[in-house]
Length: 245
Ligand code: PGA
Image (cartoon, protein in one colour):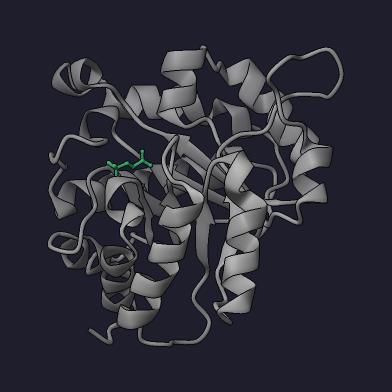
């Protein structure tokens, strides 16, 4: 599973260029879940471009609000369904840090979405927590939102150390593998379903380092910010994942 998180970037022109670059580089391969989360305002434009170019890429959103109604600036689950989105990111560290997203909010959003969309729950420790050897403790706390939940195939986790996002720094692939194994264990023992979720790695993934992460047993794909803004780079990473570069 490889998902692009475009954050607050992009334009109609960028989408046109992106699709062309992606098609120039992408080597078609079956059965891989490929997704893009553009800004809400570009979802339908992206959807049209993908379908008119016969690209089997799902599109989704970067967040959903807890309800509709008097919530200025928000986008509701109904609106996301109305745009025929396949998935939503939930709990991205930028939502936690800039907009004050809490475990309680996240839990409410998971209740709301339930099985109606694919969910990518983002978790990760800060630089300070990492330095103080608190990574596992922090992840365990963030994963409490899954306690006794009946998880399904629609549920994926993205491990994104905050200090690795957009910085060019990453943990080693061995460290990532160990954390992913830890996450899978915690989720398996705390959720009501015994499901082992897919765990993606996110944080400064690019075409030069992606292969080393993909070689690891417990890495089931990537959530990619900066490097996904260029269709060419994103396609190169997808080709690496597919082993067809
Ligand atoms: P990055 O962002 O690839 O630019 O580090 C990843 C993310 O925030 O999802």
